[in-house]
Image (cartoon, rainbow, N blue to C red; front, top):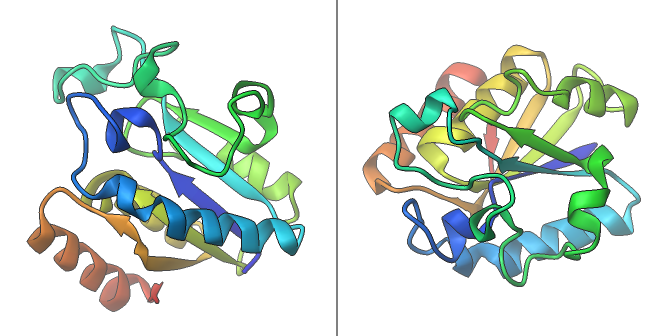
Length: 178
């Protein structure tokens, strides 16, 4: 595996807020283990985060959440990233205003700049399985990367939809779910 994407492990989804995902904070030890494995191998970890302004289109469809500069937009409590590094280490942070971490972001460029190329395996953990994680996995797959989703490192809002989403990744995109 060449890189790891950590999707929306921020307080608005794991600790507090209108879109808190039940059970998300329970995954943090597992996700920290995956982050540490990548760091031990000197491989990049990209922290993808919702970071909205009040006029973002997504907020017409979802409750207001994860506004720039708010507590909800900060890293999840106990996530293996220092609070000091989070805002400054912009080379590994990708802020997004939609569920899609590739839409109007520099994620493709950041992957390329870290020697992650088409055909390489990219791991995925985070929330929400049937929304933002799904968009990341599909985005990787349609760009020619080989996503590996760690099932102990993802969770969704609707268990049936989350399971159907994972089955779709496997059957239609050839994604490994381990």
